Image (cartoon, rainbow, N blue to C red; front, side):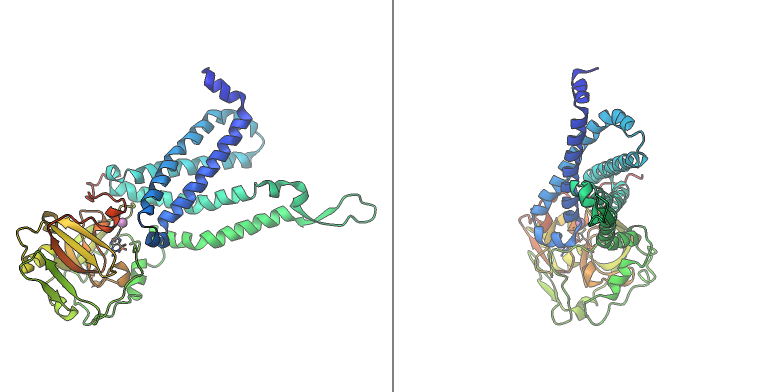
Length: 412
Ligand SMILES: Nc1nc2c(c(=O)[nH]1)N[C@H]1C(S)=C(S)[C@@H](COP(=O)(O)O)O[C@H]1N2
Ligand SMILES: [Mo]
């Protein structure tokens, strides 16, 4: 046997404990960074730090291989030791499945450009599911195994020793009481997000897009009338759910505070109010929508004005090389080259599946760039500027790739 392996086996017990501790710390870092990456709240305030959190999450996630592999080398011996403890054996198996599942799905999400949308969407479901089930399990496991709960003299609420008895007797098991408190606490914390996640990912419960249409806070009149191809949606209705992403509070618009303009290096600067804008000729397309964090919404029926049509109405000057997009949230921008802006399916969208786009999904008007990751699809679009120098968009400044092309799908 190799010398170093012998060495490890000699210090078996100690090694096992330090592997366990390292693993625990890493899972703690991964949980916190993962929840930060998932949360809309942190998306709004972290800015460029979000990319660092992402790299930390990926780096520590990959490093998790070290304790897992070290453990596997000691596993046979450990297993013998657990001969009479089926619950502990089960625990080891669950933890290994959890770590392995997180690791594999995490690698696919990290390499999403190689994997393609089908793989990443499935990997995200696995990653999320393991998180909503595994994280409470691990927290439970670590709380109920702290020394504090294991020390026998602290386990029980005791009463004074009755006459003749030298030892105090427990009234009720403090340990089981605390365990149940932990279980209920975790259920209260994780339950709601788990139920929400189930509804969204597995298509049970009410569609969240439906809810978003209901609570639309835009008040623009008149409502756009859908073309026949839009209603019923010729794509048959979108498959999947949008996650609402924003870096600002959701803006709300009405006829007094909304306008749309195209300016910069154009022959005619143009500006529309809502009444004028809804009269512009629209067309209908069916396309998929992919976020770079791994989720997609398939077969969206979008109705709107092709970007190239708007550019040709305004007339691009010969020195216009980039097109810059401004969001009505006052923060978010992005850009395309003038060639990319002329792709047939780049659309200034006004309707989704035959209805006005709700405020949370970027309505009244949002950009759609189906062939690129959706950070290019600026929500609450209200200004287009043709420019000469490159403009680096909101997320690209904060670490996203300037090359946003979605790879061809590799069917799983
Ligand atoms: N104004 C604005 N547009 C935006 C974003 C944003 O935060 N603000 N997020 C982008 C990203 S990263 C994605 S994935 C999509 C999400 O669109 P949705 O919120 O409608 O699902 O919007 C894009 N456009
Ligand atoms: Mo995204």
